[in-house]
Length: 162
Image (tube, rainbow, N blue to C red; front, side, top):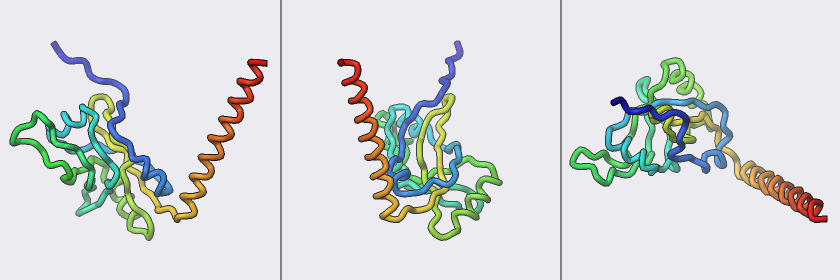
């Protein structure tokens, strides 16, 4: 009997720090070349994208510093936790990313790692580093909207109880 395929998108890991540290210019969805034990470890929902980055080497995109812990029940065929992993992308996308990332202040960072229809995908972004005052401004805006929403909801609660 054939096993039913997983449908939809199941998030494994997210890089919230990247959205704080960079202006996101463009995003891409890529496949990953993985070993079997890496997929099993990811199915347990364990991974870290914090220090990750993408480097283009000889026309191929490689994902560096993504931490996928070793599979607990793996044997001698287990993978190393921080090895570089090849990204599966179209040639035109790789060429575009290579030319854009060569510009000053631009880099390619992973934003999310997830399962899509049973396959592991990574969302990467062409990003430009934020200055310190940009980061403070973003935090201030988030705090202002949070306070506004709290005030509105408190006013609605008072209005209902009266």
